[in-house]
Structure formats: structure tokens, C-alpha cells
Image (cartoon, rainbow, N blue to C red):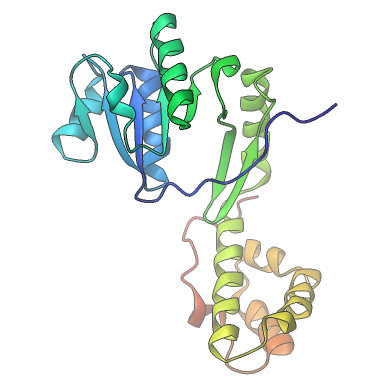
Length: 229
């Protein structure tokens, strides 16, 4: 069966995004955008206390009034999070006319993108989508993956990223990095990180990369990662 949605990871850092609706669903959408560094505007006559507090602290812009098509001007994307079906369809149509990315909560038929369930461990981001067929099952899969991929994965990727940055700073050719990282992975560096066995990690780094590579000198290990899956 042909896949309808083209999977991408969208950079919204410092990009203007609009959420129409100030209820609990709108709050969740705002929270997700803020975690990715977006500049968020909310349009809604009323808002839950958490959104009102964010607006008071200058974290978001809140226009306390009904939606207007001009609210879309200059926005990268819009999320409709209201319980008014006619308004949600209007937002979708207005966004289509302006060629703006649009998601209407729980209405995939009028979206040109949908939001997956997300698992994040530091720089590791895993997304799960059922193409809008069953959000409940996507949430179940997210919980399963959250149990399988614990905080040590964040430390592992932070270490691998720090190693890569150090190699690049030493003028190593990028194509020479691949076999080095493959050796580290094959030697189960992840398991050593999981166990927080810093002497063994340092010994492995020195054996594969040479002198000057120490886990302690590259990253601060998460204090809560020990013993987690």
C-alpha cells in the first residue's frame, strides 16, 4: 500500500507558528512547539490557565479574540485545536489558499500534515504514526518504546556527537569516521554507557580512537541514567 505521508523532521526553531484554540488540546500543541523552539502565537477568546500564564510571562503571544484569516500571515504552520468543526474547516481552507502547513487536531482528512507520537531521549527522537488510523495505538506504541529506550541513549548520543565534533576539529576527513563509529558500536559502547562504566568506556575510546579521548572530558553523564533500560 502506498504511504500517504512523507516523513520529515521539521525545523521550527525561531519560526512563527500559530495555534487556534486555547483549551487542553491547544495547550498540548503549544507545549510541543515550544519544546522545539518555535515562536508561538495563540488565537482564542479564552484559554486554559497554563496558556494564560505563558502569555503573561511572554513565552507565547495570545490574541484573546476569535480567529481571523490574517492570523496566518507570515506563519510557517498552523494547528487548529478547537471543537468548532466549521472553524476548523475554515482554518484548513485558509491555510491551503496560502500554501501553509496545517494540522487540525484529530481530523487527518483536512490536514496536510499529521503529528506522530514522539519519544525523545536527548538527541534521539523516535516518532510513531498510524497515518491517522489509530492515535490510541500510536500512544500505546510510544509507551512501549519509552520503556525500551531509556535515558542512557541520550548520554550515548551525546558522547558520539562529542567524539564526532572532536574528530572534525582535528581535521579528520569525515569519510574516515564511519569505520571508527562502527567499531565503537560493535564493541557495545551503548552497554558500557548504560552501566556507566567510565573506566571501560575510556579504555574503549583510547583503543579505537587513540589518546586524548575520555568520556569524562567529552560530556557530563546524566545523573539519572544508571540502571535504566
